[in-house]
Length: 194
Image (cartoon, rainbow, N blue to C red; front, side):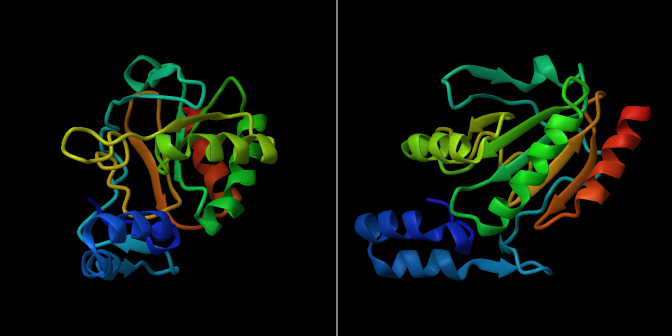
């Protein structure tokens, strides 16, 4: 089982304690390293750098429909937001993501990748509906090696993590933690001009 950021540790901690005992859960929580800016990060995980190829993936959204990034990424720039319903900074950033989605609708694909998993799908759907978010929400899954299908290839070690991917499939911006709306918008406008 993988370690999770402290702001999302409660459900995993509870499951870990029930399955493996308190010593394992404590060891997993201790593996967290705070990032400058206060976002807990899993040790040894590094986000993709600008210019890196954005990994392809195929996972389901909250409606059970499969989203294939390889088929879509060349059509428009994409924002990928990795988040959790248990992440307080994510709750602050998601309205910014919604505003950008509304402003650049049709010119920019906005995808929110929930790391909470299928067991919490109803909670994710309820939160998205309550907040009125209209961008597509995907639910990350664990593969046979218990690695996230999307978050691990993208080097997501804490939430929120945001990527801006240009139409050529290259990472134009990678940011872990809180972000300024104006900085993200400048990056989006720069990618749209290319």
